Amino acid sequence: RNRMNAFSKIHPGVTSVYFLAILLVSMFVMNPVMEALTLLGGLLYCWSLTGRGKRLRELRSSLCVVFFMALVNPLFSHNGKTPLFFMNGNAVTLEAVAYGAAMGVMVAGVLLWCKCYSILMTSDKFVYLVGRAMPKLAVVLSSALRYVPALKRQAGKVQRTQRAMGLYTSESYVGRVQASLRVLSVLVSWSVENAMETARSMTARGYGLEGRTHYSNFTFSGRDAGFLAAILVLSGGTAAGLAAGALEFTWYPAIGGAAWTPLGLCSYGCFGVLAILPVTLEWEEQIRWNYSRSKI
Image (cartoon, rainbow, N blue to C red):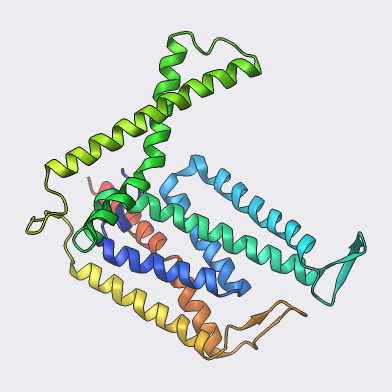
């Protein structure tokens, strides 16, 4: 069964609105609870997209980012009133370590959600969203989205071909470097040739010309409308808490946040539900799939 079945069926416009809401809150609200919800939702959804084999790697990468930021931030920021120890005459404070860890959680969460977005938003979806208004930008963005995966696939093909030709027989460092340079040379030539072929193909098809019709298999359904309404309601609940100051949190000179209020708890709940919404759709489809199989 193809993964990402549930959320990939949602209209591309609704999908983009969802990811925009998640990323805006994640990047501009430095609240530890919100950042933890972002990272948790990103991990769960990324795991559902990539499968079990890569779960440990995603978790390890996220923890490395958090640890790195918590370690590096105190080296540059010495603010805070709770010194832990002194290094070269500068205080390493609890607040600086905590803020660095929070920044690491934010960065790790954003990276996970961006990875999920790159998996879901295929080039045809991108062209559908911005192709009519900005056709040149649509081509550039869609090509950029597929460039890295296509380059990795092509590099694998070139490496396998050169191994079959006996060009990877040397185990020395110099031999490996020379082999990598040969692969890089082939990839550069392939990239230029592929770009020229794409440009000629789009020109031959009349892409970007006035009056050109567009085919699309994306339709806005009732399910898309319901999902969009849920996104707006949950985002509105989160924004209400932000506007009222219920989610305020300070790191310097002392760690502290706004008192727990019903509005704040409601905002945390809204964003938590928003963060796990795609995973919920995946779980729902998995339950339906298992139920249908049991009826066979």
